[in-house]
Length: 170
Length: 170
DNA sequence: CAGATTAGTTAGCATAGCTAACTAAATTCC
DNA sequence: GGAATTTAGTTAGCTATGCTAACTAATCTG
Image (cartoon, rainbow over all chains, first blue to last red):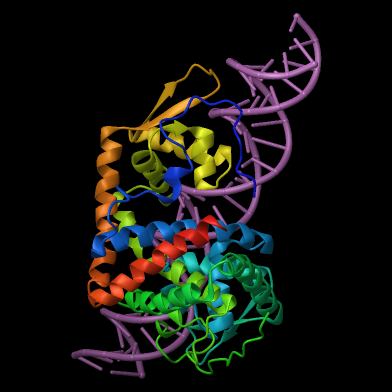
C-alpha cells in the first residue's frame, strides 16, 4: 500500500503517521507496568482490527452480522438471547442483526419446545461465506505474520494464550 | 489453507460464554503456523475491544468520535483529511465526526493559509475527557493484567512490540 | 486565465447501537 | 386452576457511523 503522499504541506506539528501507533506518552525505557501494557495493547488491538476490517467489507456483510454469524458457524447453534450475550449486545440489537442475516439466507430460525425461544443455525451459504471471510482476513494477517522469524511468531502465539486468559478475567 | 477440523458443538447447552473466546479449532498441540496465530489474534482482538467498549460508553461519546479525538489529543493537531486517513475512514465520515466533536466543544477548527484546509485541535475539555477515558479503559485492562505474574506480563509486553511491527506491515 | 486537482461539505442510504414499550409464552404462587 | 410475574423476542424511534455521489471553494498547472 502506498504511503499516500501529500503534495505540499506545512508540517502539522509532527508527522501524522508517527502518531498512529505511538499514541502513548513516551517511548522511554519500556517497562511492564499493567498500565503501560494495557495502554499499548488497547492501541494495538484498535489498529489491528481497523486494518482487517477492510478485507471484511469484501464479504458484503456488515461487521455485526459477520461477527454474529461467526459465533453460529464456529460455535454452533444457539438462541437469540445467547447470541446477544455472546456479542455483548442488547436483545433488540441482536434481533435486527438476526433479521438481516435471515433476509440474506445466512441463518435460519427454528422453533423450540419453549415457545418463547428460537434456535438459530447457520445455513450452508452462511457457513461457506464465513469460511471464505475468515480465510481472507487470516490471509492478510498471516502474510504480515510470515515476515516474523519463526521464534518471534512463536512468542506471539504464546502471548496470545496469555491474552485469552486476560480477556476472560475482564 | 489448512482445513483444520472443527467439530460442531452439539448442544449449545453450555453457557454462551464458553464459545466466546473459544471460537478457534481445538486446544490441541499448539502450533505457530501464521494461519493459526492470525486466527487467534483476530479473535482475541475482537473480544478484547468488545469488553473495553463498555467502559468507553461512560464517556457519553461515540467510539468513532472518541478514537478521532484520541488522535488529536495524543498525536497533535492535523487536518480533516489527515485525520480521516489516520482513522481509515472516508472524508465525509470524518466530516461528520468532526462536526459532532465540535458541537460537543471537544475540538476546534482553525483556518490555515491554504484556504481549503482546516486545522483541528483538541480543546481543554476534549483533552481532559480523553485522559479520563483512557484512564478508565486502561484501568479495566490493567486490573485484568495485574492477575498475571510479572514474568508473563513481561512476555505479553514483549509480544505487543512484535505485534506493532506486524501491524505496520499490514 | 482556463482547466484540473484537492479539501471539505451536503445529501441520501444502510447498518448498528441504545432505551422504552409491547406481545406472547412459561413459571410461580395463592 | 387461574392470576400475577418473569422471561424471550419484537417493534418503534433515536443517535452514531460507515459508504458513494455530487457539490462548492480554493489552489495549482500549463
